[in-house]
Image 1 (cartoon, helix red, strand yellow):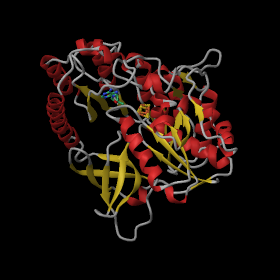
Image 2 (image 1 turned 30 degrees about the vertical axis):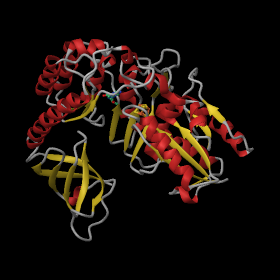
Image 3 (image 1 turned 180 degrees about the vertical axis):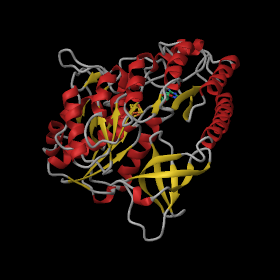
Image 4 (image 1 turned 90 degrees about the vertical axis):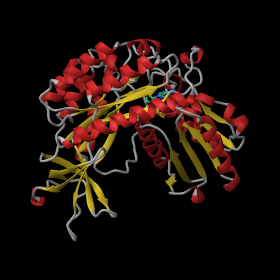
Length: 442
Ligand code: 5AD
Ligand code: SF4
């Protein structure tokens, strides 16, 4: 049993966890294959943040069983943690169930499977460990993720994460910085620091540093041109983070600060630990920076008890902030969460109506905001090229897609930084022309 296939759903934390799981397996002599067909071991890294995630996982597992008899199956990630041993009952062909808080135990769990054990679990949430591996298999040669904090100690009323990823555990600053230096030496120019709540980062070493200082230090690692971070919780988002961004252009001028609702009443019911005014104070810090920091957010519509007036406050907040992008969702009930006890549920149809209104408003805002960039020269990192349009795909420090014309036969610019003048703007991307290809810095 030496070949494995892995399928990943969910957030960037999950994507990066899979990179570490792949590294762990590869260092044990396994080989990754690109399809289920060629694999002996099939791993499924799952997400349970919204909707009917569990049903989808069981449907996929049935599909695996029907078409791929005789293989060993493992369920990882948030649905593994949430459903635990129930997975063996509903899908008896599964041999391994392991949540992210137990990935350190993967080598031992794999040994048990290799010796023929048919029911292996890693489900403890009682951990102080973070998942560090000597080998991480990264696919993108230019942009790399680094986990700085795992788990979550907040208890937002709608959210399953505290139950699936366990308590907050920060890595030492020393190991984060060592990884950043290694990546820079290996040619990576962009780093993304990851955590469910990066702002509550606290170096566990004596006199440990907080997030803003870690960000400053990562921003000083030689060779790095862009440092991003996600995701932030407004409660722990200090002005020192804005100051760090203002001081160092390597720290990208892009901040994702999920607000969830524009109504203090709903925020309180959500147990978000901040009011609308407190959130807006953070937005003011960001807007007052000379860096022109792009802003994005997450919004939930139709949380139990959300009135039309509450929803209107959300729309007003969007006009006030003018986000560069948002992720918006209809509230969905999740197992174990405090909001399950709330009674005043909003009809699905009404949630859908609010979501459409919100998304249409945001489309107009993005169109206006992006139009402001026409005529600007922005530096993009080239991510590849689009065969259909014949354009290079670029990303600005502000996380905007800025595509530009590709000249037939041009050297491959992927991974390089190019100055591009913005010519046109749509709601979701910008189009431009490179100012001078000779300027490209490898
Ligand atoms: N229902 C709808 N959206 C949710 N999110 C998290 N839990 C739920 C839920 N139960 C959204 C939040 C969060 C993003 C990652 O997913 O907006 O910030
Ligand atoms: Fe999904 Fe949340 Fe788990 Fe990420 S942490 S995989 S978003 S449930």
